[in-house]
Image (cartoon, rainbow, N blue to C red; front, top):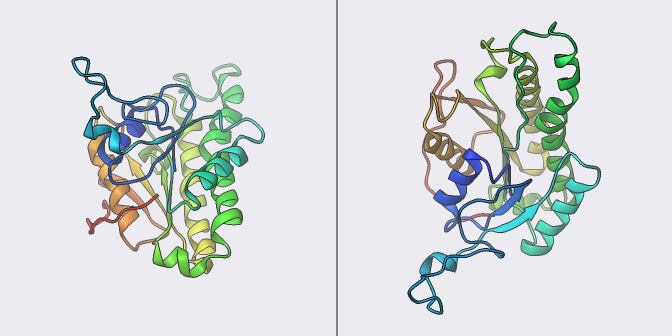
Length: 246
């Protein structure tokens, strides 16, 4: 399950891995440019002929995850489709900078709740609902399928960056700490929790590098880590062998 699937990182992940994963692509607006249950590729010269690109399709769910009941609806649809979720990538994010800082009128005060609702509250609610409905009673299955969560954080969560990123950075710092706490809690039933914390992409870090870091965390065995991507503060995850998953 991938949130923010229609954004820059989500789209890149789907394009890179839609043949390898059964992806539940949660989108608020735009959808990834890959085949889905709603859209697929057609050869204009032979529209009736099947294309191999359509053999694997993502499952698109449109949702504003900050609205009441939407997380529960998305989890219900994903479990109805696939029966279980092996990987949750919390990628959806809200980012509004206040260039003149937190004292620029009421701008920062008004932006507090949107930042924390999507950047912290939605990952918390999604992971909690998946655990309650899928993972808590399947300890052996969780370990066998190497089930895990990857939260997409940011380098702004561990250092002060220019441009009025106080609220965004604070929400990502909270997500980093949520990652560590849930890793400790979810270990009891065999689910790993990590985060990637890239520098700005694609401006500073190539988006494919962030995509690869997510996939490496999925197939690895690490938990409780916040891994920098394109930053000197922390190392990226070590590569590991692939596996098929949902």
